Image: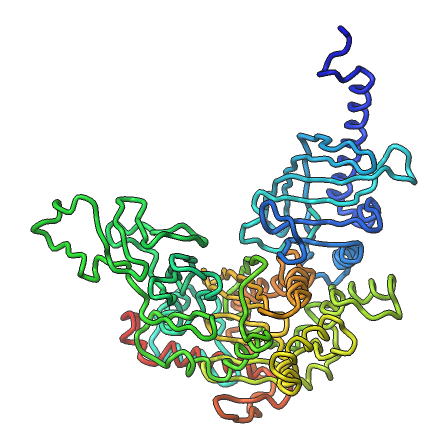
Length: 176
Length: 443
């Protein structure tokens, strides 16, 4: 009884939760590194084939079919964006966008089984053509264990809720 | 400061002086003489369905409130309390019960502007304060008119009525509404608002500039084509790729498009994407069937057969009939323009038609569009380049001298003609110079 702390959760379960959080964090940091490096093709491979990337236009938006979105991209559209960013006549990427993303407040809000839901906060500093911009908000990742790489994940859904989703935006060209 | 003669000299039949894009003094004059006179789109009646519903909007430099008043009609008021000048409502939309109440000192006003009351009226006894005097009302803009739910307002008491002003461009608003089986549209799905760091006229000129499409948009055209070849060669190209790849049509394609220019700077061009493929596309087929059931097969074919790409309503923006949107263009500074992209639902049409409009807006007009950034980049480069002393004139020579007259406007002999740009500057010159001396005393 005495060793049974943490509201009835045993030490073994705490250990498992910490390990899961650590694995999730390592995955999120890897993802951020790929995005920061503009390594779009590698980033695309983090998704499951049916995976979605969604940046709602509205706070608390539930529907992407009948409400507009800042991004709502399946594998096809993500690949088109990556191809355009790599095209040598992408006038709006001359010079290219560079950005750095910092992730914190990582918490596993649904440990599964099956899919794992992870919520984190992010801040992103972007720089292009003498124009700095700041973005921030929350990431909600729905992850699956990666069958091809033990201990890692694939993304079923990456939802990005910007604090300034309702701003008047200039071009948003790179994945957030 | 410019005389009318100097302003007129900046607009030649085949070229314009670069100052019209970069001189803040000319922008100031445009706000007075163009946006102070034209009918400008302020919003749609579906955005204010109930009495007391309001929406903030803008005409030139004037923040205004579009409100449905007790008479059931849309009214447009300056967003200024006559007491201390505070803006009476914050930006956005909302609802008030029966009257506006200023949050500073609680002066209240009827929804169409007249003053209702001010606290502690005894303090005004023996003064010139008079609630019946319009000086103590929320000021109404000079003219308001609604055409099929589209509300326009003018800061000027004189001039053409709205229908005469719209002229040939009225057909595009009609066609947008007629695509609904009940003949009505409503704003739905949320709006995008995006910045362009360039003069407002550059965007208007681009709307019918068919020579830029394959060049400016090469990156998104090639990306869409390559993706198609890599992942689905031989199948029907999906809608989201089709609307990106379409910019890459060869010059012969653009040369054949019909381009109409109407009085007051308006115009429209023939559609790029063929929505009449009703046999292939289930969404178009369902739309056609719902419309034919309401208005008959022949009329449905006529309505859906009017395939327009961008329409220009000069000073307001660009409706797109086929994909049910209105890109509202708001000049903010000589080098800064806000574009609001509004999507419409066709009342009574299958929901898939609306979902397609949302997909179009997401793909083409979102700030994250793969298509628009290259446009916006080029507009910025035009803005920056025209600040230089590398030459004073901007060319619009293409097919100059060949335009053919039609009732209320002109038609281009070739789809790549710069007629639409020349036509916009005919309107610009008339507004900026006719009677300009008495309009602000800046001449």
